[in-house]
Structure formats: C-alpha cells, structure tokens
Length: 228
Ligand code: A5P
Image 1 (cartoon, rainbow, N blue to C red):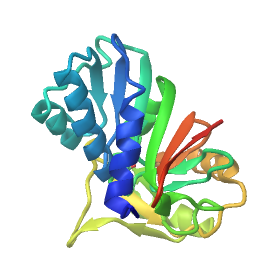
Image 2: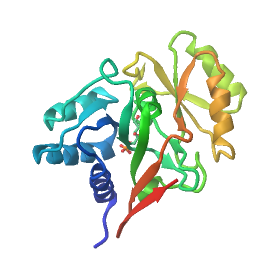
Image 3: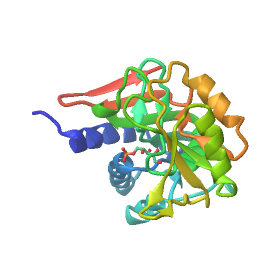
C-alpha cells in the first residue's frame, strides 16, 4: 500500500513517539506533522506513560490539553530530554533543517537547543539534497525598523518578503514579524546562519544547524530512520 503525504506524516510521528519514556521532559514542536505526534502521545499517556511537555506554540498547547498531555515550562525545567518536531526541509546528510513556515521557529529553536535529543518527523517531500531548494527561509525580526532590517537582507542578496495575514503583517507569538527569504540552494547554511545572527533586528533564523539527532521520514512504503 502506498502512503500519501498525510499518512507518511502520521507514520513518522507514531514511530517518533515510541521514543518517549517514563519520567521524560519532552519538547513539543509545532505544525501539521506534530498534530499526529500529539495524538499518538495522548494515546500512550492514556495507556499509562508518564511525561511532561513544553509546548512551542499556543496551538500545540491546545492540542496537549485536548489529549490530556501534562504541560510544564522552563520555570520548572531547564533541560529537555527529547524534543519531537517537524521541519520544512531536511538535508539527510548533515541533518540540518529549515523550519518556521508555521511561524513558531523561535520557540522551537529555544526548545531544541535545551534538548538532549531532537527527533524530526517529516514526510518524504521534505527531504532535499541542498537546503533552500523548495522553501524560502523564514527569519523572525523585530517589528521596529523592519524596513531597515529588510534592506540589510536585500543588500546581502536574500530577497526578503514580509509575511502577511491578508494585509497586516503576520505577528508571531513573541510579538515579532517574519520575513521569508528566497535564498536558493545554500552551499554553506552554517555560514549563512552565522551571518544572519549578526544582523541587528534579526531575532532568529529558521536554519537549525547541528540540532537534530534523528530524522524519521515517512515514505510511500516504509518509515526510514536517519541518525547522525
Ligand atoms: C513551525 O514554525 C514549523 O517550524 C514547523 O515545524 C514546520 O513548518 C513543519 O510543519 P508541518 O509539519 O506542518 O509541515
């Protein structure tokens, strides 16, 4: 039987959730693939699994409440045992990622950096030979002076587009804006991430370099686990 992309996401998410174990603090990512992971985690909790989770978005927090997944925060826990999250693009050789099409990249990166392990769950359409091929790079920026920040990005050749909700700028849960940059194929994503981090007004980019420890890919006829 050939799995379509939604079924691939579900299969990858279910496989990832088997890695959760009693007593863990979990980082709970955001996005449509994570919706399947939250349902699978809820089912395991109903069977007796004891974990607590730190959500990376209001939507994920709402799903946690729906599935009776206990929530916690950085007030109580500085370290996370395991984060499960989706991605927009994955380079299967380096395990580097592009994230942020859903707008939750900043909290996702804070959670990923505090995590012992990060499992990324994707359908096979997210696997690319070179980051930047299929999606623009989301970058979270401070609203003040966003026009100047965009000009800096433009000068660097990154072709920024302010993300909008119809006419108004899209505002993240941190009160910031997002610009989507058409980067094209990125030969050296780590260098680009470092360069972006040096721009005043940039809060964080959607480049996740060296953070994922495992990628679980739902494919048409199988689930593939890629480790570092
Ligand atoms: C949210 O900001 C993103 O980083 C998501 O993790 C990413 O967009 C994957 O989302 P889907 O699972 O919906 O493709």
